[in-house]
Amino acid sequence: MEKTGYQNTSSISKAEYHLINKISESGIIVFGPGEIKKLLACNNQTAYQLVYTLNKKGIITKIIDGKYFLSLLSLQPDQLSIASHIVYPSYLSFWTALNFYQFTEQLPRTIFITTTRTKTPAMIDQTSLKFIKLSTYRFFGYTKKSDIIIADKEKAIIDSLLLPRYAGGIDEVYKCICNAWNEIDSSILIEYALRMGNSSLNKRLGYLIELGIGMGLLAMRPELMEKLRGNIGKGYSKLEPQAPKKGKCEKKWGLILNIDEKKLAL
Image (cartoon, rainbow, N blue to C red; front, top):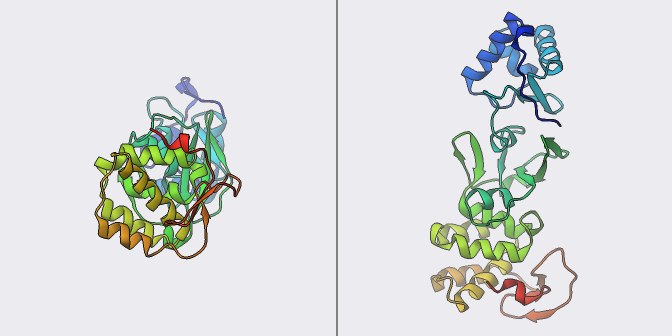
């Protein structure tokens, strides 16, 4: 998708000007014919015709079927605002949220969007959009920052521990935990972990917290660690889900340490 900044306003009709103003005044970030129909109190034919002509003129840009945003440079929302309004319900998480909170210096080329629906990848300009489907009971812990709907700090970490491949891998997640520690509530972190209902996630979190404690980077109330350890189940899980199932076994947390431990040295 090429970035557009429509400059030739002489070809914009009065009806199109009116719609652009309505969209701008309403605060709508992402819209389609349905939203246009409501804004203008018009019929389906008029709404679809306006979408067609505005898209053809480059005044609006298509993201996915039925979803557009204003391409006019003076009105164009930023990518994170657009991404968090494409699908309902959804919120930004994983590497995107970790970068937003400055827990990582890595700038991912993909925007990661958590939703309860199945959606195919999309693009905004040269940036990829990846939709990660979570079960409804795992869809919690998000907030609104200006026009952006995003995981709160604790949930960004928990989502990333569930699926580290969307956050740069378990070593990157560990670095983010250490960077975030003074800004997060450890009791909320444990609560969120337990709500996810995933013993492998609990194992990873417990092990990494203890690793950080051993390195003098983190501090944690013992009762919270015991609460977490009481929900790790039996058997062994991989520390890095995407890596082969080989490496030494860590008995306390039931983990196979299947990555180079040097990667966890900060």
